Length: 109
Image (tube, rainbow, N blue to C red; front, side, top):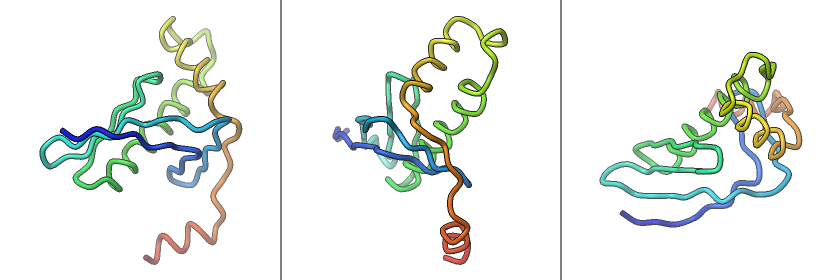
């Protein structure tokens, strides 16, 4: 199990780009044939057969947390989810759409 850190300054998932207020340190592990990426302050853990697939899975997990937690009304969230929402809102500076040029380029690749 190799352990390293990667800095994440922004993330992309689907048609969205998440711009962060400051970079976060992602823990990168190699466990057998899998790459595992973790960010413990948000409780996000994702894996893939390659480092790139693990990074994409991490971006999807982050995006899901944003969609289902950060954008939800507090009255609909439990105590732990409200704490996670607070952390997400403090971390993310902006969520912007990807440019159509970027989306088209990736679709044809």
